[in-house]
Image (cartoon, helix red, strand yellow):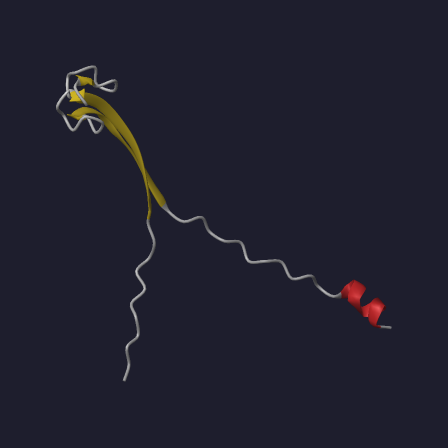
Length: 77
């Protein structure tokens, strides 16, 4: 008998989850100091392979930020 009732029971579906809101932004190319040589243009007496001796490199970034709702803590005494 249990098997008969199991066939007609409603199957519970998980509640659909809303995707977290995101903010995507691309920072345009800009010039920064080389991280390999620290902006000096050379490492250990040789020309820096990253910046070719200029001490500067051009970088661009893609930033993705997740935005979540603020939920205050309940500190009741």
